[in-house]
Length: 89
Image (cartoon, rainbow, N blue to C red):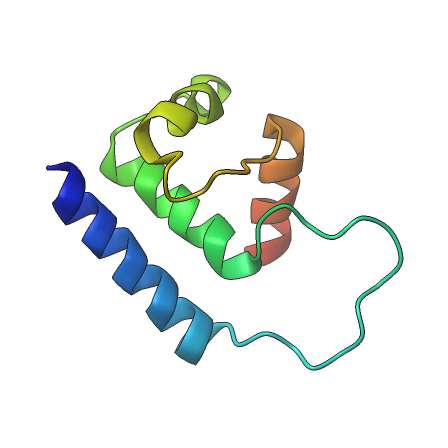
């Protein structure tokens, strides 16, 4: 199961990064760079749904064990939620 999920998340990331959310050519703003790119944040959110982790409070704790090999640096819960809200409509 892990290899199928890895392949699906990798393909989704490549598609999002290349076609849906290409990186802007704008200079980076001041401050720390984000831990996850926009495409990576969407992939982590999709993994949360696919792994049926409904409670966001516990998701990032279990994400390190479940998909940590794909995303070695995961943000804190507050940063993750703020980034997802910024990406939504």
